Figure (cartoon, rainbow over the protein chains, first blue to last red):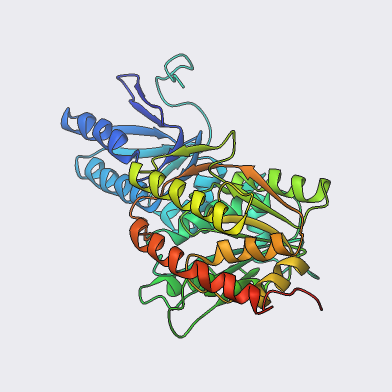
Length: 114
Length: 257
């Protein structure tokens, strides 16, 4: 699964393809590094994520809590239909900040490499 | 499109028999089942036909059933078992309860992504087949994260099976198989193996009956923490092979009405 971090002002971590227990450590490392650096407003681009499993969801919850505890927010950006349904079924759509429209502040299309 | 169609499917009971039944056998799948149902529900709902989901539980002792019940999906049927019988038993009960014109059984871990169902339906419909089976060994298959030991065991078993049973299939065990309903129900009514070798028994029955079976290469991801122990399954497989041959010799696999 290709994972990219772009834009220092509003970091975007993109998780394309299958986001599961095999790929979760890559994205966790990226999120952990950002939070360790004191960057607490983070966007996770799930627009091209085909499938997300329980391990990945649990990790996102963990980082959401860390971001909020530090006064920031971890926002899920444009979750794909499959991810949105999974979020609804697990009721995690009520817990996460989800942005389905518009641009990420300070991010241009060229910042969002895929 | 997908989400709105899913929401309609979630709330509105379909009228009449569905075109497709998707059977998911479960046993202690509390960690995996909800994302899998979500992926399946989103994709199949977007295909534009009526369908039902059949969760056939096999005596789970964790929270699988509670989680599934709480989803409150009106077009989902839940089959419960008083005790664990094995994957074959769960699939058999699920198929028996299915109302669809076609029946797919798919593993609870989404190891074969549901997005491939369209190609299976096209194949079975356009070629007038009885069964289309997923294959991780056919040309064009894309297999990710399968361990070396599992790959080796699968290849070895497959060679033994092909030699002993004369089966032409390259992969009997992939948990993604589509049946024409009448054919699937007939096969499962004479099949008797409850464990992981049930796939082999199904295909043996189908080949002996001269049914139209095709293999399609699939994209397949090994599921982390798989409950499948390669060594144990291999031993069970070898033990079940003579049972299948004996059943055939005793005429137990006749599909005549």
